[in-house]
Image (cartoon, rainbow, N blue to C red; front, side):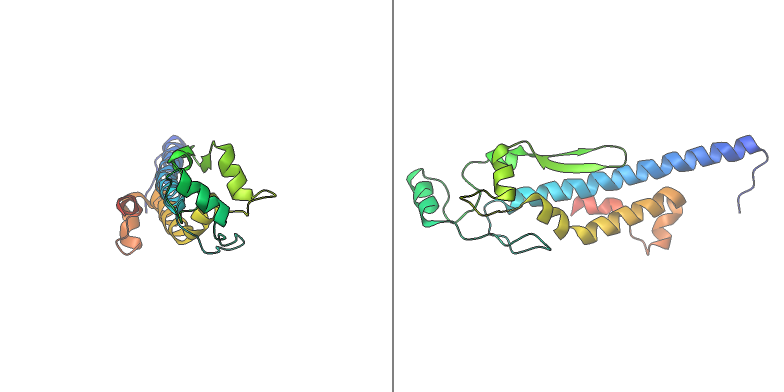
Length: 166
C-alpha cells in the first residue's frame, strides 16, 4: 500500500488519479464513438433488421427503385444515392461525452419517417448494436483510469486500446 508523508502529497496523488481517469475514459469514448460512426455509415445501402425498439427497414417502394434506376443510382440500396448521407455523419467527443450525428435534414426524415416514407433509423441502431463494445471498452477504460498500468493484468490481459484496430 502506498504511504503519503503529507496531506499535500496525498492531495497531489488524488488530483493525478482524477486526471488519469478522465484521460482513460476520453480514450475509451474516442474508440466507441469512432466505431458507432463507422457502423452507421456502413448501414446505409443495406437493409437493416430491427434493433431494440428501432424497426427493421421496409423494402423500397417500386416508384423509388424506378426513380433510382432512371438516375443511375444503386438499386436495392436503401438511403444510398450519392455518398451525401454517409458524409453527413460525424462524431464529436468531449472529455466525458461523445456524439454521433448527422447535419443532414434528409437523415432526420429517414430516421423518423414522414407521411410518405417509413422510418429507416441509422444512428440509434448503430449505437445499440455496439452495446457490448461500449460496455467492454468504457468499463476497461474506467478500471485503467483508476489502476493505471496494473489494469491489463486484472482484466486478463485485455487492453481496451486494441479495440481501435478492429
